[in-house]
Amino acid sequence: MRIKKFVGRSFKEALETVKRELGSDAIILSSKSVKSGPFGMLNKEAVEVTVALDENDGVSPEAPEAAPSSDMGDLLKEIKGLREEVCYLKETLRPIVPALRIGKDKKGLFNLLVRQGVDTQFAIILLERSQETLDSLKNSIKGDIKVQGLLPAEESGLIFLGPPGVGKTTTFSKVAHLFASKRKPFNLISLDADRIGSVANMKELSQQLRCPLRVVKRISDLPKILYKEMKKGALLIDTPGAQFSDILEDIHDIFPSGFPVKKCFLIDSSMSVPSALKSWQKCNVDMIDSIGFTKLDMATHYGGLYNISMLTSRPLSFITTGPGVPDDIRVPTSDFLAGLIVGGI
Image (tube, rainbow, N blue to C red; front, side):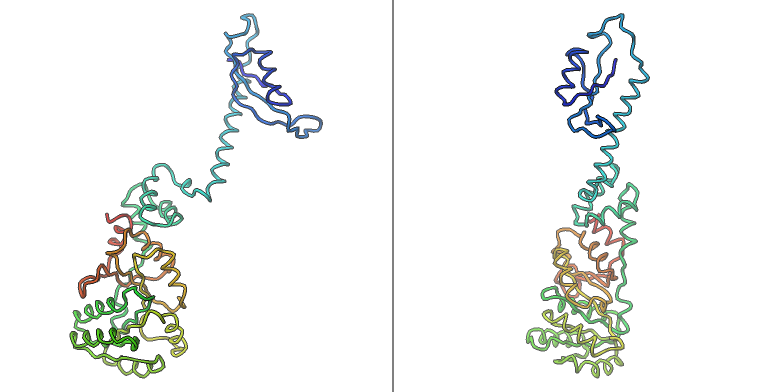
């Protein structure tokens, strides 16, 4: 096999030279623009063509044998150049196609995470820290998600915050039943005094659980009620969804030394991550102590649980799995959540 380079002012001119010297059986291996002219100036019309020809085709037997080492060296240089171009292309596309950072042995896990709704960048970070097995991936997820549970709130209590429709009042009732099951004293407070239906539900819950209820019309009345009732046990405080951001600001102003009750922000699991984060960012997030996921039964996949946990950087107090009171609530383990996130495995 003979390998030779030809240079012409254009590809057509170089090709004519190839045919004239080697005939029509020559095989074109590559072509590229080259520097030509005086002082190495780039002539855009100059093209270098690398061709190959079988020694037995179109060449006299008496012709001297070409130096294979030199020709092979040229071919290896061409291959190296092509590899460098491919590597450069991958680096260029990496921000656009982040999955290029994932080796072929982890592509299946990457696709699994993305199908479950895990953010692409989060999926890449997870897989870079994991081995090629599903168990290793779940362990990485478990290490990222913080589960706080209700223990920190059992002494002081919880105030539930979040946008309308997220399930605050229903969740409030479920947590109240959990507190009652532990036979610890607690009190109910509602800041949703304007909605007759909400007040009626609270009164019914108070009678059912045999615990005191206070309905507060003004946030400014909350301090004296709060410190008085805290002596009798933990406090569970329900709030109207339409005013959750304003309520947080009022709490910040009225309790400058710190609010004595844990502040839990509720997030609807069936919402898209952008919608959930939009609600989250409407309030003073520095004041939020923990999050709770509601309506898991209505979610189609659970990758958003991981996304939101990472983006809010708040520990999880509980999840609710349906409308039933008091049953559809649980304090999950990190292992349970990791299984949900990768598809219920």
